[in-house]
Image (cartoon, rainbow over all chains, first blue to last red; front, side, top):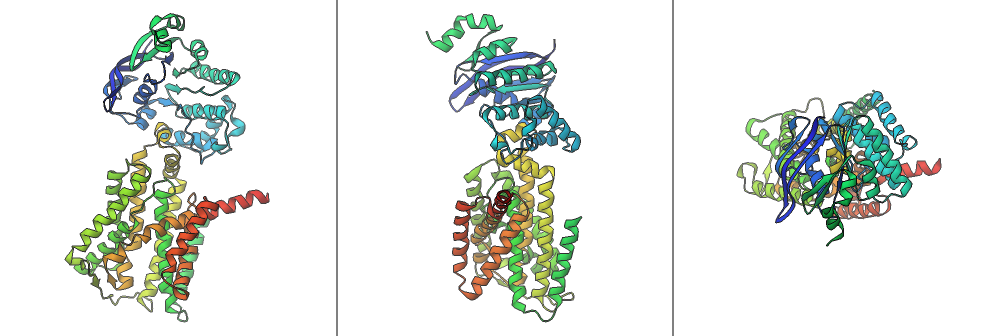
Length: 238
Length: 311
């Protein structure tokens, strides 16, 4: 399998605080990777470095064969990195459909009837078709989460980063979102999932990486990760 | 197409009006100001309304337009059209420059930075002899009136053309990718970036267009007053009006600032004549507070709500 994402020796500091110290990570094409770690361990910071929300870090990030370390977020999106946000960030003055047309317009360069049809197909796949023309500030929490994933899909990504897309959802809703992520992966999209809901991570991931205090403390299959003493220490203390 | 037809018809109507002999001269004198506010409110809305970046530095852009016109007039006796184009270009350049320096700031910090631009430029002009410094400069209007009876009538029509021009640009921006991107920026800048929107670039474009349009609104001012001086040119009330009018009209659509400017500026002109000039600012202030509290989406929002409830 081919490596799609390479994070090499990434260090990110906020003033005197080191949020990421020397992180190395490889993600394979088509992989389902789970990223776990206690609060404040640097998961979202790492995602922000990969997606380009931060560009002032040390080290390098390669995506799909090219060095993207210096690229801005929108340029990385064009190359195929899409993400959802931990706290949903809808374009709240727009309808769900218009939300999806933003990436269609700016990544694909077109937002005509063909794209609207495509957007509708994406929404259909996520069970949001009947909400297409509802203003996005009217959506429920689970619908917002789905819309974020739909919007990320509209950018036609090769890599999708789902930042706690299930936070605050009820049991059946978690399964719905999980189902969507599985479906997207079947289309060949590599997925990095950050999640606190362990059973979701365990069910979804082929490989799990655990961050603690800005370092990757271990990685492996979901089964080995839960038994790993370092992971248990990171979550539960000594 | 419908828009093109309506706007040409409107201009033709205003042209006829301005060459008709029976109309009182004061109508054109006041109409110029109203139309100027249509340009200013429309220009402000491109950055402030669509992208959510509140520019308090409106007088700086007006002044760059006005003082460019003065310099062009004094040095090479440039005709009005050249003054306007020159003013627009320089104010657009100021927009780009201010944007580059400040658009990384968000919210209130951006607004404060734009106020600073006003003070910096005002200080410069105060100490610039060529354009009259703090005392100002008397200007003699040239004799060229085209086919108008008076200079004020001509300026009125010129401002009408500029207003239609600005609104056309605002309408184009709104319907284009740019408008979609700016709305995305206003709603969530992070999500916009991650949806492929080059946020800094489109904010810079918006800031440049907005600045240029404010510049062309300011450029005819010296000829209109036959006089220029810094205190009134750099008056911060312009900022209040230019943001108050779109907010009262509604910022989400190009027609919002037009409605706001026509209503408010006309009301102001009437109050100036019938009551007092000082009451002007009070009226805008009170209306602004009322609208922000009762109808935050402006008149357009009220109409939308009324339409929905009558369904």
